Amino acid sequence: MLTAVLAGAALSVSGLQMQTLFRNPLAGPYVLGISSGASLGVALVVMGSSYWGYQWGGLSGSWLLIGAAITGAILTLLLMMQMASHMQAGQNTALLIAGLMLGTTVSAIVSLLEYFSSSEELQRYVMWGFGSLTAVDWQKMKAFAPFIATGLLISLLYFKPLDVLHLGEVYAQTSGIHVRKVRLHLVILTGVLAGGITAFCGPIGFIGLAVPQMSRLLARTARNSVLLPLSAMLGACMLLLCDMLCYVPPRGQVLPINAITSLIGAPVVIWIVLRRWR
Image (cartoon, rainbow, N blue to C red; front, side, top):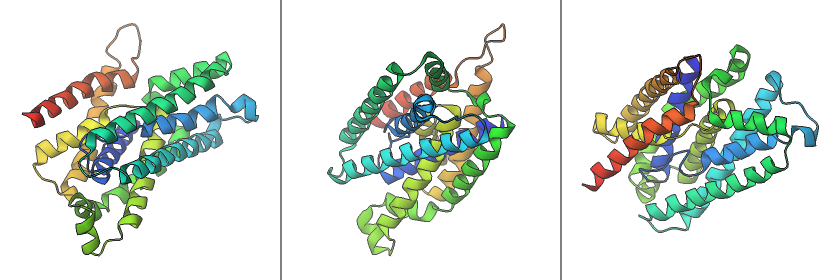
């Protein structure tokens, strides 16, 4: 339950930050390839352990895993920001397509790593890719909770720069905000949140995309002082609900969390898109 609360809040806040940063309501860690970049970092750690000659198990391995995932997420975000800087304003569809293609490219690299990996390493990575909140035990929580809690607290303090960026870069510059510095801070925060969750719980889709949209519909405001805490609370509740649904099958079987979030989040996103179009 503690893992679900932290992961749901972190994914929702990172999704809201990305939607404001890219000025795109359909931006999210999963859609723009951020989760794929973090997955590549994890794949290099998990499936490259025998090649590089290290052991990634235990607490030290948890720090290695989270570092690799955060590095992959931040590098992917920086690449997306570089592509977005060369696009004209309003080209949201082109940015989404670029994000999907970047995620596809990263997935192809991961597939090559899977092809040359041993069966044991491949099984570990495939099981991790299904997504599971039970993978975080109390020992791993020592590395998981400080990173995510610190990233959440710092993110909640960035509501004023996010409000100004929402009005455009020209307005932000005239307001005295160092746009490049704020963007870099937001990229690091988003990479820490999305990368940390992906490292320990696997790639969890649609929470970071759907929950900020739900928060806007409920709050009926664009103020991030309201949207940030509301998104964190809604994300925690939504991921707790998805985790409960994972235990519905009988005989002690547990469904992968990524499948449940996709089944719930995808219809929500479709409904939001149709509602905006109408």
